[in-house]
Amino acid sequence: MRIMAIDYGDAHTGVALSDPTGFLVGATFTINSRHQDVVLNELFQLIEEHHPGEVVMGFPRNMDGTEGPKAQLYREFAARLEKIAGMEVILWDERRTTIDAHQILFNQGKDARKRKKIVDAVAASLILENYLDFKRMKQE
Image (cartoon, rainbow, N blue to C red):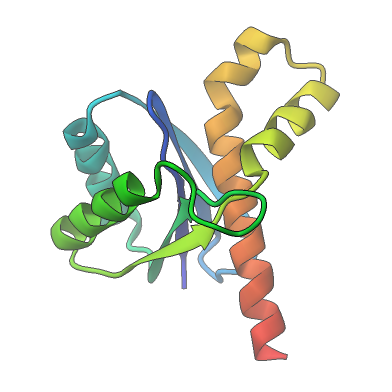
């Protein structure tokens, strides 16, 4: 079963898809828009094209585990996506994913301009990896 992960952002939204087995991270995409309706439409198109069995969206938490300042906005966005896609959106703790994504890209020698263009897709990949690891551990 393919799984989709979303790193929703103000200007860029990263999307990562697992391989068809739901075991590895496969393709990544970046949606470049500040408009929720545009992002929702593009996410819906990706869902229609790739038919994921689950959709996981990064959810902002503070380092102490409490909900971050954008938590309500993310809940509302997830509810809108659920409505148009007709499937549950699982909210997943995204603490440190963007920081880690920047570090990965920095270590690969990407300059700040190049990192900005792809950091959200890498963050979505990290969200997906964390979720896939969780699912594997739960099965054991």
